[in-house]
Amino acid sequence: MGSEASAPYVAPISPFLRKSGPFRKIVTGMALFLAICVIAITGYVAAGWGLADSIYMVIITIFGVGYGEVHPIDSPGLRALTIMVIIAGYGAVIYTVGGFMQMLVDGELNQALGARKMAKEIERLKGHTIICGVGRMGSILARDLYAAQKPFVIIDSDERRRHAAEAQGYRVINGDATEEYILEQAGIRHAAVLATVLSADTTNVFVTITAREMNPDVLIIARGENPRTEKKLLGCGANRVVLPTAIGATKVAQLIIRPTAENMLEQITHQSSMQEELGHIGLQFDELAIGPGSVMENKPLSDIEVRGNHGFLIVGVRHADGSLALNVSTDTKLVQGDVVIVLGYKSDIPQLAAKVSAKTNVLTYRGVSVQT
Image (cartoon, rainbow, N blue to C red; front, side, top):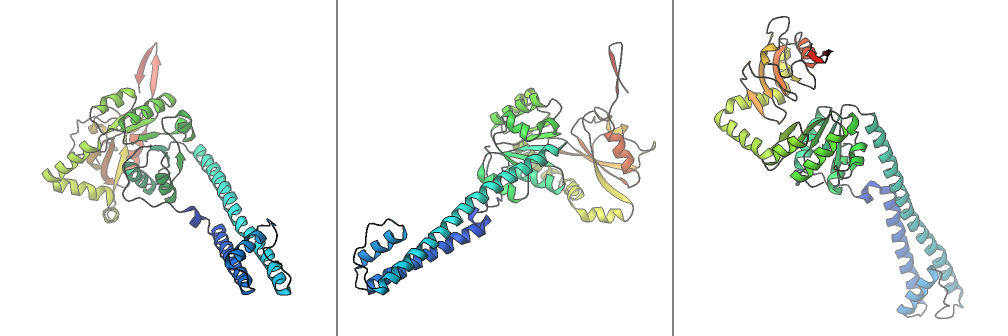
């Protein structure tokens, strides 16, 4: 899949290094073969033969062509040398060819077994994330999901990027994410999120259309390079559209306008040392995601309560497009994909998380749907 270069990429491991056993056999066999040829040629030259005749004699002897001797082999020494050339030469050739065959067989078997194992792992996944494209943005996304121990599957058609992702221990599928059977292999029917972060907006549009048709409930987060593509992606079924250029510019502006607030939120969400210090006094930071059907969807922040009182502090809200909002008004309505960052007592956080993750019940009475 088209995507810009990742930084840094892990260089793919050479097949020869991955199969050091067969490769060592090939190198050893070729070295023995060359040594036998040199010894045999030297022996024939020492017997009075010309260099060209000696090389020719060694070649037709080892490879069994049998055109006949260049010169009569009538001395015991020459006959012993020729016998040695036949036995040792054949042995070196067979040993080298065996290394080649082992490399081919091992490679095919490992590839087939690896693909089968990965397919079974993906079949067992439920509520996972599908990442379409593992370029610069996709590789960062995969790294963060892996660190958070969130299950995900990568789809990419670039061999170098696939090898780099496989070297990191990720689940990778080779193919075009616009194809239905590739998305089927990635478990689109049971996926919770699909992130199409390819560099080409048109490809992201096609992936969005295909994924939405295959799974109407999946949360689709699409990347858009051109701001005018955002409306098209949303119209095609994307829940959220990420504009990296706009987000980057906004981030720079916030660092200039409110550097202290931005640095504080980064420390809150990324530094474990702060979490440990707060834990000593019974406090912790947590992230509360507004999922599909949450009772807090389209509700204001003020509706978040624990035991009738605010035993926590709402630090900010991270929207699905990656943007961060600090000092959010209590009248701000939460939407699907938002993540509320809160600071509270450890005893209150589980209750708060349970409330936010609770699903809305919809009752239908005489054709009228009522949320409860």
